[in-house]
Image 1: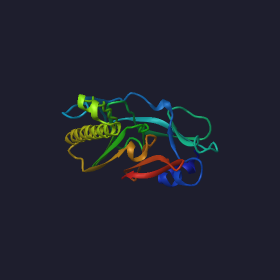
Image 2: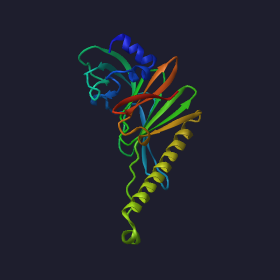
Image 3: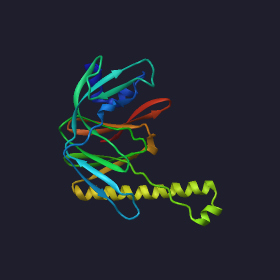
Image 4: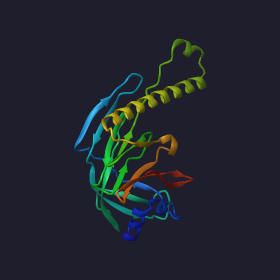
Amino acid sequence: MNPQQYRQFLADPAALLNSLGNVRQIRLESNMTREIPNSVSRTVQNPGAVPLHYQYSAARVTPVTLRYDDTGISATSAVWISRNQPNGIYQRDRAYYLQWAPDCAYAVDLGFDAQLFFTAELTGCGIMVFKAPSKTIVVHHNVQVPPVPQTFMQWVFESAAARQRREAAHVSDVRTQTLLNLAQDIVASHPGITGGTLLSAQQYGDRARVFGIKRGGQWRLYVNYPSGGNYRTDLLYQ
């Protein structure tokens, strides 16, 4: 990634990534995963919901490099985000990074310590965004809902299609209740929150990636997701 490309990326990543060409996706190197420092952990547990282990961090900044890699093939071309020094032309910066784990929710304050934000692929997860006057809080959550055992009557009379519908409704209800409890817990802990938005893997696919850029003191969050055999980037929240 040369300086001109990086300036374009910071100014309007959707325009850069959606332009004709092979490099249309954001990809994170495996070395991005690391334990969160300066964090507080607790379990959010309520009736009818999956216990969710919530880890909150007010400071989560790491040095990163950005490399614009056009291999000539859309599937392998990407803007690569890494903690290591890559080969070729790249740019150095600092970024907030948000990891994930099963049945966990990781949250971070996006403040003024960096101008970039990245998080892991959704892979069945979801994103919550909360807006407060002086910060933006992003939550990467994963809710694993165990199946409901069949009753004897269901085992005898329930069709496979009916069972699928019942289990899908159960998963939806439990996940909704779990996320409602988590959102209420976060809002109670941060009374300055004025709004927000939700994103799920069902909306953009399990290979979607969320990233953010701070310009003019304001955070803009984008989603980079599979579309028509390639990737597309849309503005998610500002």
